[in-house]
Length: 631
Ligand code: AMP
Image (cartoon, rainbow, N blue to C red; front, side, top):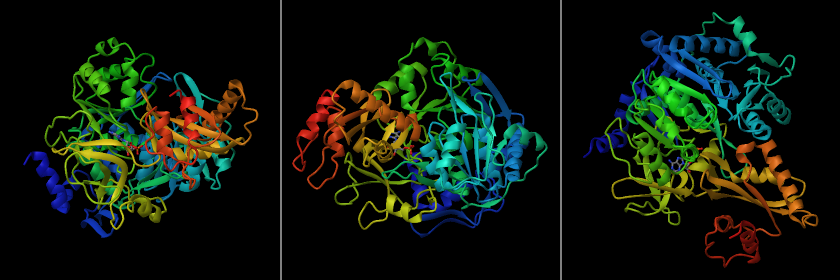
């Protein structure tokens, strides 16, 4: 048996002993009494009886041994700002932020919604929440007021932390007006808003509600706020993710299990050591930002780079110049970013010394061969795909190179990670597929390992019904991805089983986009599907039926309405969710019983064969789509 196979076997067959050992990678105030309580499946409780603190593990415990070493390096090529905080400085800043949160009334168990650009204060705010036992709920800065409002309503934060603006490609993107609008739209009103003024956009402060970070920080310069020791099962945060319904789900994570899972992943998956430097190019608004920009590297005593800016500005060498300057050892990005770089002059890469890099990990969407090969030959380091989800918090499938070096297999994110009992399930029969190369739904037998979601925020029933009930008669977690496994245990992911699409590594629910488009006064009905795109993996494409089509006789009128719809989605959900095209049709492809034929629509939009159409009501419906997309 290979070293990894044995490691994996122990994680499943000797589960408690295995995770007991992993639990020693972090500091506990009170050690756990029970490793895993799975008496109430599918709810798993990890490290029961233990008390700990995420901020202590990420910051405080490193101050004595490496207080002067870099912890957080915040680089913005948008504002030309660059600042490195040592562990000692981070410790100080986080306590100031924690004191300000307390001053504004935040207590243990309260939610703090963070709607911020990629600046150091965003990480301070996350860590400060963890420090005092408050839950953060970070909302991606690219989301607009509608998306933000629904998250405020669901999380019911006491406080929102935000900023005057972000910046993208040199263009200022004001946040404050979107936040004001979102609070206006939301039934829940936070009692306070804390604003970091970057001096990018003018802000109107609402008296009594809005507070200036710089002024309050000044009052708490010498603050000493001890870490609140919380139960291992105390929720550390919620992070919203899209699913098949319009309402986003608040993925809720614990404290102890998450800290252990991240510490273990830093060692076994990333083969990382304290003093090294991690550069994840994601955003704190996504799960990668939580696990591998903020918590994971810091828990491991590494420096972490937080980057605001584009990968090609001022030029396509910017990331590699950062790698050279900070001797980055671990880099984590997404295939889309690499595809963007691939379009640029390869000479940019050759300009910098990237020999410090041990590997480049890519995740969030399928990694295609040309992209993998291009970056592999350009960087001359292993390119390691990894597959996971917001729900799991750390990789489900990849290579655990810290346990045993294993070769990557093209097109495969790798093997099941320790702790994950990954199964392939026949969609029709619910039976487990044990043979090689059989296609099934990727499912995980409970208990989910430490670090995975505890539940859906305030909605246990939704957690059970959404994730654990897709196989009749069996309680098993569904990833909603199709997959196969070869004879050697390498898995391949073949796309989603639901209506979720993946645009540039960002997960979006088509229903949410449809609801936004349907709120246009002249839209009667709409279907949004994901369509293959050579740069972004997928793009959203909308097919709408107008209420009054009489004015849509020429291209100019159709383009005008398309523009209006795009503007609407932009304003409600944000540019990430804006469809690439909105086409107007007279009828959508449906079955005789009225069910939308999404897969057929998607196939035609991708110029593929739509398959069996015998149940379709109006065969002309797909012909219209074919004509519009030029198939
Ligand atoms: P998110 O929760 O936003 O991280 O999205 C998770 C989804 O992205 C997964 O369920 C997959 O559909 C997709 N995904 C993530 N990583 C990969 C990967 N390495 N290969 C293929 N698909 C991936």
